[in-house]
Image (cartoon, rainbow over all chains, first blue to last red; front, side, top):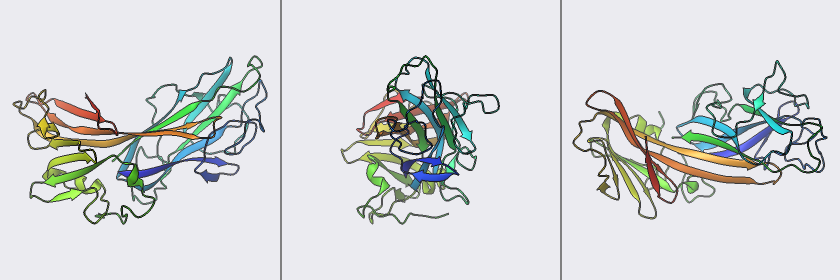
Length: 165
Length: 152
């Protein structure tokens, strides 16, 4: 029906920032950051980002939520990992692909993996008791190696898809 | 179950403004529910779902004159009052059910400080049981300009 959508990022001790303008990666845990101010040193990772979608307005049901990288070429030995439906933790620069966390390369086409509601359900039903209107978190992080070229990386585009009635 | 939303069109920043197509549901007793009624009140699709058993026509229309109609009695889909000829009208269809949802794609970028595009594709069609009892689907994917493709 007529849901409205905002991107949202949480930082620090889960301080929520709705209506973010970008998901720039950098060496700082902040939203809408300027990469030139917080560049990622080669052979390190960006701070991971916890992003999600917030729905307001009115609808009957939001379902079939998916997230993927839809555009933007990697530089040599640059990568972006993703974890879906993850619990928030204070963002760090630790590699999120390690055993025990297990994030994997962000999909580069529409994936089969669905993003849930923040409450863990596969749908966000309007007016349902206790429903926040948020999707679950997607955790993103940029990784580099010593062989990654210096200078700015290419811009990337991420797509969030959902069905609404 | 609530019956309407307290959202009035033309009263400021309203999410409905982003929709190209609006629906009208017509029921077997002749009553209808419009997504936006004559008083500018927006109604949720839940009201239609609550009366699926009585639904006979579901129309999707825009300001440019496009009209898509799903006939839940005979299992036909029409465009601007013409029935699609490739849908076998003589085939007996049972348990005909409406398919309708909006598929949103929203983009955000890195590095460029701007949220990118937001596209809405309308998925409209029906599913039914054919004479062999197999579930069949016919779905139109309609863009905001009224162009459409047929899928399953």
